[in-house]
Structure formats: C-alpha cells, structure tokens
Amino acid sequence: MPGGAPLDAGEASPDGRDAAPGQRAHASTAGTVVQAGRDVTLTVEQHVHRVARPTGPWLTAAVALVGGLVAAGVLLVLRSGAPGREVPAWTVPVAAAMAFAAALPLLRRRRTARSSRAFLVTSAFSQKHWIAELLQRLHGVLDLAEFCAELALPIVFTDIEPFDDAAAYPDNAAFVGYLSSDIGVLAGRWLVEHLRGVPGPHVLVVASREHADRQAHCARVLREALPDVRVVVDDSCAFTRSRAHDAVLAHVRRLNARRDRLDAVFCTNDEMALGAVDALRAAGSRTATDAVVIGVDGVVDAVALIDAGTGPLCATVVQDAHRLAESAFHVLERMHHGRAVPKRTVLDPYIHRGKG
Image 1 (cartoon, one colour):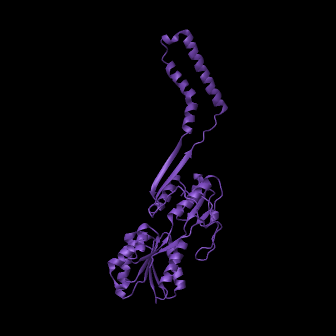
Image 2 (image 1 turned 120 degrees about the vertical axis):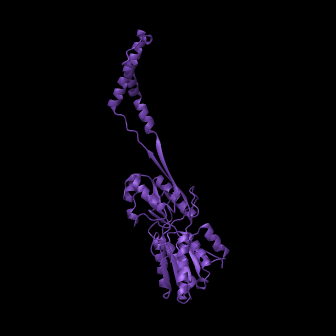
Image 3 (image 1 turned 135 degrees about the vertical axis):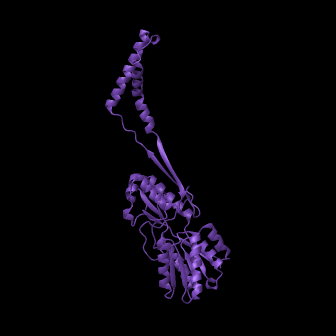
C-alpha cells in the first residue's frame, strides 16, 4: 500500500539478528497521512493517464483536404444562391459525415486528456487479505512482482512483508512496518521478566495463523530463558475477541479439571487480549487468579485498561500507527520524486506497561 522517505540506517533487531542496510527508520516530520487505532480506513487511488498518440502526417493531410473541400463547397453554395433552394436528400448524410471527419481529431484529443480514478475504501486490518486477492483477480496477475511492474506507480506495503528478501522487490515497491518476529521477541522478554522465579510457569498463547512469527518467537524466548516453562499455543482465534474469549475460557476449565494453574496469557493482538480479560473475569477461577495478560497493537481500549491497573491486562506491544503512516508517507513521497529509498524500512515496537 502506498507511503515515502529515507530513513536512518540500521541497527540490530531485538533478537540479535542484523538488520539489512537502511532497515530502521524514524520519520522526522509529520505527514499528511493519518492512521489511528486498529481499524484504519484505507483509500487506494489509481490514476490512469492515457497518452495521446501523435497524429500521422497522412491523417493530418486527409483532414486538411476534407476541411478544404467543405469550405470550398460552402463558398460555392453561398455564391450560387443555393441556400434558398431545395437540395437533394443524399447531400445531408454526406455533409454530416464530412463534418464528423473534420471534428474527429478534436474529439480524440478531448477523450485522451481525461484521467480515470478508482477508489477502494475498506478496513485495512479485517479486509487486507481479501483486497490482495481482489486486486490480483482484477488485473489477471498471479505474481505480485508482475502486478507491481504493471501498475507502474510507487507502491509501499505495510503490515505484512510481501517478498522474502530485498532483492525480490520491484523498482517501484517498498515495505514500511513492524516485523512480527520483533513483536514476539519483545512480548517474550516481558513475560520472562514477569515470570522469573515462578516454578514451572504455564503460559497460554492466543494467536492467529497470520503473523505466526509473533507466537513462534515469543515461545522461543520463553523456552530459552525459562527451561521449565510450559507453553500452549492456540492459533485458531483469527484476531477475534469472541474466539479468544472462548479459547481462554475453555483452557481455564481444562486446567480446573486437572487442578493446574495459568500464570500468563499472550495474545497476538489487543482485540484478543480484551477477549482474554473477559474470559478470565467470567471464569472466576482460582486457577487463573494471578494470571497476567499481554497484547499487541496499543489500541485505545487496551491502553486505558492497562493504565487503570484494575484487571489482568498489564502490557501491550505497541505498533505506533501514526509513526507507521508518517514513515510510509515519506517513503512514497521520495519514490514519487524519483529519489532512492530503502526497500525495507523496519520500525521498532515498544512495550506499554502499567505503573504497578
């Protein structure tokens, strides 16, 4: 999706991997693109400018000849006094055809000067995979690189990296966003800090099959730092609050039957984290009395609940939507003006935690 600007070159990512040159970035000035909260309205605008083909010399000569004949005929008719007489019926369509031929270049010029626009407005989060499929069908293109090349406009992807490495990006495409692996590492480190000293901690990870690196890297960090940790991953919740609620409630009931306990829940977005909070409150079980919840995104409702300090939601890994929109705008702007940009601009998430 569109965005623009060069950003400061890279530093190592939180899990120790080296970032590609030009990865890390910080936009220095405010852009005109605004992206707030988790439900972002996205507008895709495509301008198609048709280039007028130059008129061939033979066509110019033919039009000039027809125009000359029409003018001469009109002059002859006027001199002969014919306007006051009846004319043969066959002359009417002939005259109309000659007039249309004379006006044809003007009509072609007016039509080619037009610019067509197509607007697509949707939720960037709930519909992004459907949008990608729709665009591929509309253009009849199965390969994303070919689609970018055919579009021939600056394209900035956000949220999900479209290509495996920077070398695969077309010249008119770039990525700006947060890496799922970085988010998972940050969440894992927060959980390690919170659970250190707890014997055999039990962690439930509530996730979706998209952005699978979030749960994979969080689980890796936990297992490396806490050898006796028990991690259960449920990736069937599809970033949905109600599904997360049902999954957490069912897990707590299973633990009740085994007289086991739940120490922490990591949800890979804040919607699911809010569902987890609802479930823990509804369960009213000693199994999860001290369980903490950490989410991802930093949406308004989650941050307010964390700041209030009245529930199990204690932290969230923030993807700053304003910074993302700012950075994407700067990259898009530079691409529009033909300036060099890094193919991958990776932003750093951070933890928002309660005061307690």
